[in-house]
Length: 371
Image (tube, rainbow, N blue to C red):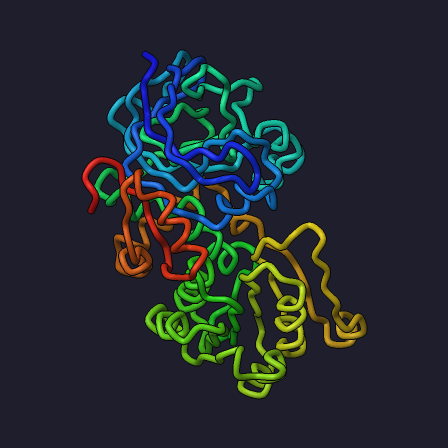
């Protein structure tokens, strides 16, 4: 059945983030309709609304969601009505070279389905009947969404859905950068540049992985204080340092791992400069396409330093999402503390303003009664 849903839509790049009533068509073969319980407000959604991430408008925002299956399409056997799920915006074909190597975030065919379903169409339409694209093949900043089976991960029904939603982006991006991309070794020294929602998860990932020293770097004192709650052993206020990379190196003797979570070439250079010999800098932040960085090339061979990127924490969603939620249930991963404010769907524009102003570790839209 076709369902009516309140959803967050951007009609043109740079235009207002608005809440509209849309229609959500029922699932076709290998598709599932879910009733959303919660959706995290991610900076990537903001980037899509401005065109920094060039997804074509009109666009239903949202990719960090969790909810309950309410209808399944033909051919779906792994999910049934009533199952709890987390969305994954990684579209994977399962057959290309990268998928076969266990690196679905790099799927060679993913670019074909970033704003629609794999068949090239959408199940979302505006009040005038016009098709609406969906962020990352999800578009889950809405009361209902119809998505492909491959964009859903079944989870333990005992996990609160507002917390579970965060695993779909912020948590896996941060913790995954530590576990999967860097493969941080116990006893290591690490620095995290930028401790917003993703950076805080890098911090707690470093702590869980056994880092002996974790230096959080940011320009906001309140974020640095929160970083200590998530496991940082030391903090540096970047606004008080003329050379942040040098300050980190002086404090630590040079870190083994530096994580850049800002998305700015100058910060990447600082992270690289903070490394000790044999160190690895991991770029997690999403920079503007025109952004550049400059590093000392000799340090690559002479000090055996490494510079690498991490996209969605090098995730394997079907494996990693349940693993992270198991750590949460065991008390080894902070999810409750990440949610600094919840919003109703009608308050979505305010949620984006608060994110732009750095007010939240993570704001979450909850559907139905606001928590």
